Length: 207
Image (cartoon, rainbow, N blue to C red; front, side, top):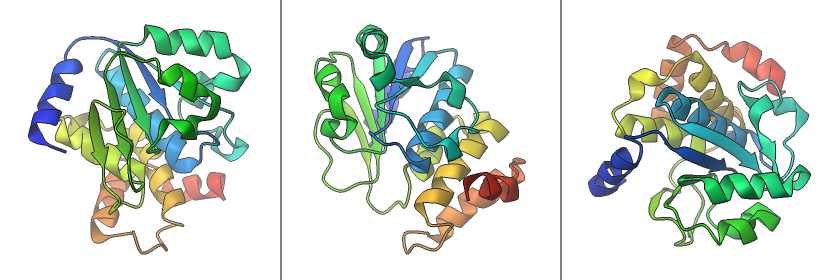
């Protein structure tokens, strides 16, 4: 990310805010891992974050820390739309265009507060005020780890946040088989394991 964007985001996060955190439709391990990792991080900064998924996520992700707090737009459109409308900041994670949220696109198109995109897919749209987009990464979770580091808050990554990040890295890397898995991916994973995540149990729960 650009230094000026990081500084601007630090300023936005300097005071408590209502924040909506949005994954793509049919969210996978990376979408849910990244949004919930960010959710727990924002809680530590005294914000009021809400993860709103366009539709339900798979049962094999229901164990993720904080999964029970996730709002499902398809199940409660009016309430979810109101949360987005009242948000003072909106994060969109693991997608590059608002149409990937399905029906939620109509609500997100009306957002007037700053939006922050964190994503690793090609050709990102220009809807966000601040965009952290890089196709070199195999997962958005890896980018969320970097994002927290960019903000100078890496010490806030605890076992809960680390568990969410590890989940997304694992699923989007095909359990570290895909070519996008780099030495840096493994270095991040090593740090997550050192923080106390139960990596073998996470694999059991996922697969």
